[in-house]
Length: 597
Image (cartoon, rainbow, N blue to C red):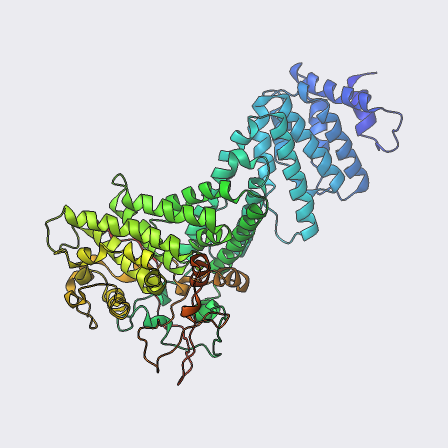
């Protein structure tokens, strides 16, 4: 029986009717067709390739024939040569799982796995082919998406198990295949979402031990890019006529907030939605990332993942101007595990600020994030906040001891940014610090720092300084209060030279523009500004906790930590406190380059 006859019997006729031919005979026929190419006879080889190119394989017989051929090729991979069978390899690696029925998909995946593990020279091609199937064509069903994704992930895991080197080969492929964003192309946005979803699934698998760091990097980079493209800059403008703390109090939400209610962040940004497809995609990607962090937390991996997450944050977010939403991924991760991740985030930011090896931009951005985080993190106990403040206060005090300059905002930006961070945190946390003498004593060097001829009170933003002095006077923070002007301050040329307060609010509520689900996840962990109690007259408001206890009822310091880590909303005797969204908002920015000269 000739080669033509051997090949044509099982493949050119109906394979279902040819039940007398065994799998071994089919494999033998394919091997002969492959071998004939090296002898100059390409008829059988060309016929074999033609059998793999039926359009869509809707015909049942064609589907069965293709499945049979793919299985025979899986048994013949040792006979495939990268030079002589280039056309066959090209046909295999350009096939798409999305075009085929489940039985053909299974046969094709098995062939790809066989090629990958038989010869290392096909490994990259096999990995690329599988990753290409992370991109669905338009208008496919959810069922089809699940069928394809399941097979691709199983194939990647099997190849990685059989070839330990595979995950390290996979990492650059995954990074290179991240889709480009075309703002006006809805399909490209859907493809991006699907691709990121697949990446995060891989990160949570054993492959993630090798590719996890790269995955977080590319995801964080994409979040940043979408954040900057989200089209919200037109509403994120400074209104110099409104103080930064007044902005959270001046305008009202339609419904009154009752005692103990969570702050409705959605009311602050309900007018910020642009119907922008990029913003919609960003919301969905943030949702995916939040779900992934929850999964890591529930499986005990969050502490491990956090190290990679922070590295991604430092590389792509920390020094990026005008990010509005993506930084909240770090905030949420900290809220899931305050004792570990929450402490690490603050500590790492502080280390960056204190490090002389970091750039000025890095240090100023880090202390800006630190101030906002310590102020806004409802899950951070006062004892921890006081400890962080002490390190900042000591650093600024030491700087003053070695500096003989007067007010030079540009020359001493890092120092002034540290002072401004301290004042800002105390605007939110003053009461909890002053209620514990031990905490208050940690701030002792602050008075001499503020009285130094560097004069940080004249350089820092007047809204921060004014609110700080108001609370410091009422609480008796300083022994020699006459040294300070407690009246409202106006913005000076010096404070403008240093830069506005906007860098202090990377975690501002005005920067949130997310889905309602993400809003809920953030708001339960988020401190918002509420007017503090500043006097003890009978007619003043009384601040109570959710159980109706007054401050005098607190005895145990641990219980005090718990209570004071949650903001207390007060009942006003004459009027209800209402909150409104400001018409214009301040974005999170890094220091302008001109300040770094």
